[in-house]
Structures are given as C-alpha cells and as structure tokens.
Image 1 (cartoon, one colour):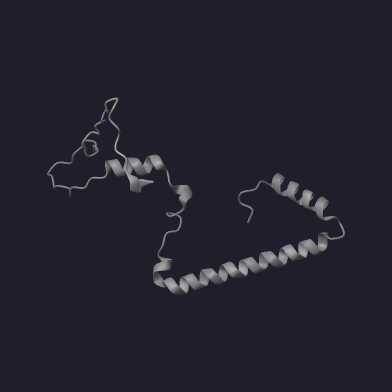
Image 2: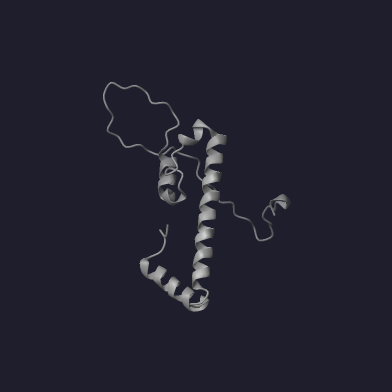
Length: 126
C-alpha cells in the first residue's frame, strides 16, 4: 500500500497529523480515513471488473508488467530500433558469427545560409 514511503516517513506523517488534528478529533479523522480508503478500493475494484467485462478475454492476455513505463529504457529502445533488421533472414549453410550492424541511412546535410539569406519559415508550425 505504501510502496513509495519508508517507515520513517509514515511515522512522521502520522505524528504531524496527530498534532494538527488534535487528540479530540483524531478518532473521527481515523474513522473518516478508513471509510474513504474502503470506498476508493470499492470504486477501483468495480472499475477493474467493468473493464474486464468490456475487454473480455483480450484483457486477461495483456502483460501489464511489459507496459509499465518504469520499465522503459530509452537507450535500449533506440539500440533495438537501430539494430532492427527489416530484411528477411536468408538461409545459410554455416552459422554466421558476424555482429548485426545498423542499417545505413543518408547522412544529414547542414545547410548554410548567407548573411542576407533568411532561413525557411513555416507559418503552420507555430
């Protein structure tokens, strides 16, 4: 439940809340918090069940760990895209031990402008 907090942080939050709320209203605040957490859990489980009903069998086949944004590594994505081979593999009689090289693309050519030359401007881009 508190996956992003350390135990010390939770203790500090509880102590500050107890001081701000006061000992008289603390039981009512704890009861309200418990009720709210239960309602939120009920809403979330209901929404999850509804999505599962709407999506059907496809929903259970989705690997949610794979879609977690914390799993993305931009370096790996770029490396995989560069090393991706678009041509079908040719059958060979002997296994190749050569490394996969990225496909060659045309180099970017920088355009230099004269002092009185204005660079192109796109009205629709802004």
